[in-house]
Image (tube, rainbow, N blue to C red; front, side, top):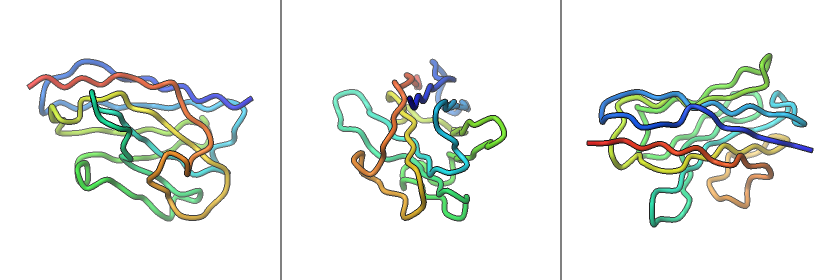
Length: 125
């Protein structure tokens, strides 16, 4: 059974940094593409960032480009989202996602097979 568990969310001030992590079990992340999505209050889930299976492609939403960095640690079977220069509009529940195999980094929820339960990030202005 595949399980993804996020950690690292919390309440921060605008301009602060935060690092989210996603730990996988039942899934070898070295064989998977990974991604982060978020759902702001009252809005639909939106793509934040994705990393291809062999790390050859990174994709970011325009709203986070230059501020967020996605990475993975295959030895620990985890991946992370480093979030810098946080803004109030980054407030959301953040979800990690994964899928086996290569191919493009999809920006739709149905492109991904496995999901974490979500972690709240609140940025106060």
